Amino acid sequence: MFHEEVREQPGGSVEDLRREYAAWLADAVESAGVDAAAERTGLDRSTVAAVAAGEVGGLSLEEAGTLAALADGMPDGETVVEMACDHVLLGMSTGVLDVDTVASNVDLDLTPKEIQQKLERRAPMSFEEFVAIRHFVASRQGEAF
Figure 1 (cartoon, rainbow, N blue to C red):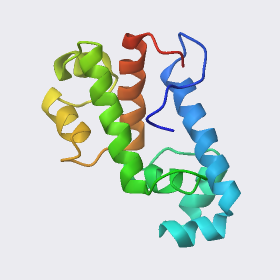
Figure 2 (figure 1 turned 120 degrees about the vertical axis):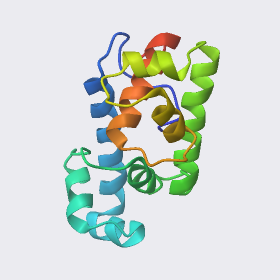
Figure 3 (figure 1 turned 90 degrees about the vertical axis):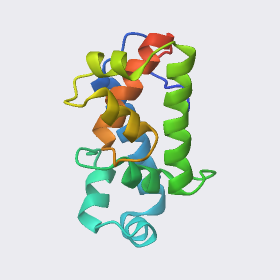
Figure 4 (figure 1 turned 30 degrees about the vertical axis):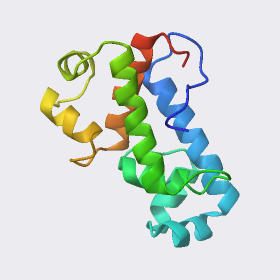
């Protein structure tokens, strides 16, 4: 999901994208059941229940990937995260974007080096950071969201 084109209308906001991802993660958790999802992912039940209610603030990208892996047909959480980061990096390449441009256009307190490290999976990334970066790259590529 995080590596696919998003579904919302062109011109959507970061919040629109966050809501879309939150709904998708909530569906994945609901289909597995909150208790089973907590057991399968190793995440705290309260965190999983919050995601089921559409609350994704505070998740790491790795936690979101683990929850996404609950959906039918999805690979394991690590692969979900790897594919998501690779998709953003590819989008930056095709959109002729560098980390300096991304850093100056997303509402995050991150340096270009920190963004690069996060996308290359050499530093942890919050789900909120991923959504903001993904939104900017998609908007520059003309993707619908």
